[in-house]
Each structure stands twice: as structure tokens, then as C-alpha cells.
Image (cartoon, rainbow, N blue to C red; front, side):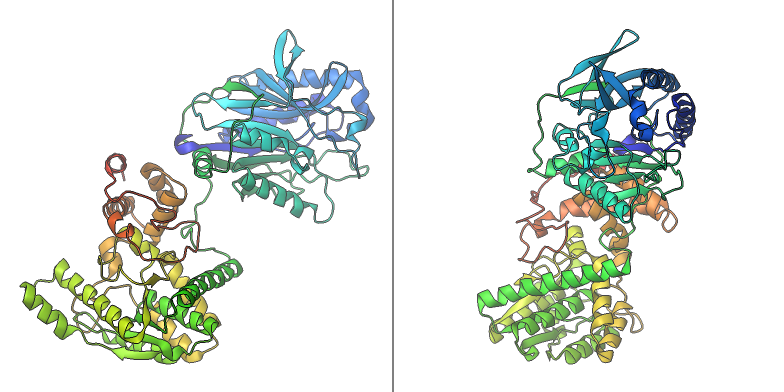
Length: 637
């Protein structure tokens, strides 16, 4: 449970209709399997102790008594085990029959939750047998034990305050006003659903959509266990469509008609952080009884996977749509800036690298939207000490192919003169040597923009901004930064998408070579004509930094949690020592370089993570990194 990960299970036993003795044995067998898998929350289907399809047999007193005996046997199976178990059965209370979930922990029945929404349409006739549950908490007596009974019960873990479990039953999830909504607003971070949802054509798709959207809307984990084989097939068929979801994402899903149990790890810390961030998620529903339960503090072995590129969809169609959307956001954002300022030209420094290439492509799309001639795009190449033939040629070809005006300003002389003026040794290739070139380039761009009644288009991406990998008042500055919301790992895919869809063979060839060029600021002299300064050798791999960036800013993970999932995700590619080294680099640079982000130019947000000081990241420039660095120093490779 370290870092908030809770192992959960949705389990469907093969039952016999109206045979609680047999069913209890099968449930106990499944419990043993779940214990072996270290599941801490285990959910069985609706009415699984008797079977959902008993129909008028639910009126038989013997069946109800045997169901309670079976429940006690199942409760015994939880004794000495470290899990919270939900199991369904019919329960008589005050001369009414209820479709209920019993909650078990360490041999005890902690509570019973009756179903709220009783379907009586289509193939369902539950109102013939069951009464709807009441929010009023009463007591159910069983062998002298007083068990809380009612819909407004929550179960709170004493060791992990963020772990609060609420329960709804089948139709409750399908209703317009779900009990789960009330549970979540009362603090539940995990909802469980004991279900008996039969199969009809395409119903599985709708069911899955409800689980996904419900967990997203309520910012919760959702464990859905459904009836399967063994239920009567007189009129209906049940498939055991078990699912586990977290905040809109399905983590595990059973193949239907297989009787498969599914397991997953829900991150309750992540859910709590997301709710803290959403000021419209208004918790505090009254009238709930919260029952405590205990779980041992131990590390949950993770089986869930974390994508190596969280900003980049893995599925091609989704990725292409994402790229198209982002290019539109960038180009329409720039379009508005031109319409507002009335500027004539766009001035952009082109280096032959990925970022400036993307910015130039976006500017071309913007001019097409404005129905402006692309000859008003001034692409400026500014060769200096580190420029290589490959990047220079690509910059020139790109501008020519896109129909922009190429302007070359060799800055070697002006930078050399500047270094003479300030007493900088030309052989001393330090930060002054590098930044002097970057600032000269920005001055050139700004002055050309003045000459041409233009706007300087920024090229820096979000990953560089997060690391502070930009020269203050150099490439850090522009009049509109079109790439400011795009992480480096996504820049590459945007350029690739443009290459694949542009329909221009010459442009595609240039873009392909740009994609094959190492990322570099080219501020140091080349070695034998090749790039001598590779960014990722200096600050670390961008695939790692973008991974860190996402989980730190989007989800608020601690350094130890980020390191843990990074080890699981990249352990086969990077040594643990290397991952830890670059994580330290990220945190150190992220905190120390905030002053650059505090005065960023305007630029469009394109995703759920952004570093604009006017939007998502309102962080003081002099915030102390001590507690984060202290936790990192305690980590072991």
C-alpha cells in the first residue's frame, strides 16, 4: 500500500442457482486465490451466495436462512486475512426483502448495504421480490451481532486516510442519480459494484462506458464484479464482465464468458490529489456512517503498467488525431494573435532542429488560415560557431519548400565583437560563450520583426522550459511561443505526422532528415563537421524527463513514487543509478529555473500539463526544493 497503491479484485465464481452451500464453497475457493494475489479489496457479484436468477425462490424462507448460514461461513474464511470483502445475498429486514451486499473483514460482518435502484423493466422484475434500500442506517441482527444496515455506509481504512470505500449494486450505476455519486461526494475514493448484468448485443460496450465515465466523473477507483457462469440461462445469459477502472481509464477487464477474475492496483493518493485540484468537486455529504477497518502497511507489488511516453498515445489512430488537434490549437492560437495585433509578418529563427521546424510548420498553417501569403513568413538562419552543414541545409530547404522567405544573418562577427567588448576569451567555451550567441540571435529576430512589422515566433518546447534549458532573454523570449505547451517527446510525433500527411515529397524528405538529427543547441564548434553538443548528454534523456514531468505536475507524485514507477517502466533500458541521476537533475533544475518560467511569453496550452505562470503552474521563483531533494537523497538505486 506504499505510495497509495491498493490491490483490488473483481471475482466471479461459478455458482449453482439456489444452492448457497455450494456457492459458499466456490466463493471461499476464490477468496483463497485472491489472498494469494495479495488483494486488499475483493468484490463478488450481486446475489452470488444464492444466484441472481432465483426468481420466486427468493420468497422461500429456507433459501434466505441458508444464505445467511453461507454468509457466516464466508465470513469465517476472511478470518486472519488482510482484506475487505464484498459479497451479495438476499436479506430480510423488517418484513422486507433486500438485495444486499455484505462487507466482511477478519471474520466479522462490518455492514450491509441494500440496493437502492430496483429495476423493473425489460428483462428485470426485481421489484417483485426486493424493496429499495433506505439511507437511514438501522441494525441487522445476526447471532446477537448488531450490523449496520443502510445505503449510506462508507468504510474507511485507519492506516490510509485516503482509502474510503463505498458500495453500489448493479442498477445503481445505471440510474440518473447514482448512489455512487453521493458516496464519492461523501469522501469515497473507491466504489465497488456487485452486479448481475446480462448480455445482449453491444451491452458490454455500454457497460464499459458507464464504468469508465463513472470513474472519471467521480474521480474514483471503480471495481465492477458481474455474475457469470452458473446463473440460469432460462431467458438470460451472464458473462462475468469484470472491470477495474481508475479516473476514466480501464486498468483491467475480464474476457467475457471465461469466468476470469481481474486484479489491479488503484492509486488512492492520485485520486485524492486530483480531487484537491478540482475545486468543483465539492465533498461533504451529510448523513453517512463511516465504519473503520484496518489493513497492514505493506508494499503492493505493481502489475499495472505506466506508459513510457505519457504525453503520446500508443494507438496510431488516436495519436494521429491528437497530433491534428494540437497543430490546430497552435495555429489557431497564433492566428488570433496576428488578427489582434494587425502584424504583417512572422519572424522565426530556423536552425534545422525539431523545435524550430515545428514552429515554422505551425506558422505556415496559421498563414493558410489567415489566407496570407507565406512569403510574409521570414525564416531567419543565423549560423555561428556551432552550426553544422546538415542543420543549415535543412533549415534552408525547409523555408524554401514551405514558401517562406529565407534570410541569412551570419552572427559570427557580431558575437566576436561583443566578446571583445566584454573581455570574453574566445577559447573559453563556457556559459557566456554559449549564451552570448543565443542572445544575439534573439536580438536579430526582434530587430527584423521591427523592420517588417512582424511578430517573433518562439520555438522552445515545454520540456526545455521545465528544465530551464533556455537562455534567459535569448531563445527564452519571443512575442508568441507556439511550442510552449508541447513536450519534447510529442514534438517529434507532430513533425512526423506533418511529414506523413503533407502530401509533398520534398517537404517529407526534409522533415525526415530533421527527425533523424540529434537534438542540439549547436553553440559549441563542431567536431569534424558533426554536432559536438548533444542536449540529452547534458541534461538527460527527454523520454525520462517527460515521464517525470507528467507524473510530478499532472499527478503530484512524490520523488520516491516517481522513481518507483520509472524503475518499473524503464528498468530494462536504463540502469537504476541512471534513472535516479536524471531524476535528481530534473528536480534540481525544475526548482532553480522557475524564474525563467515566471516571465514566459504568451503561448497556447495544448494538453493537461502546462508551465505557464498565468495558468497551470503558479509557482514562486524562489521556492525551496529541500524536502524534495531530501527524499531523493534517501532513495537507493
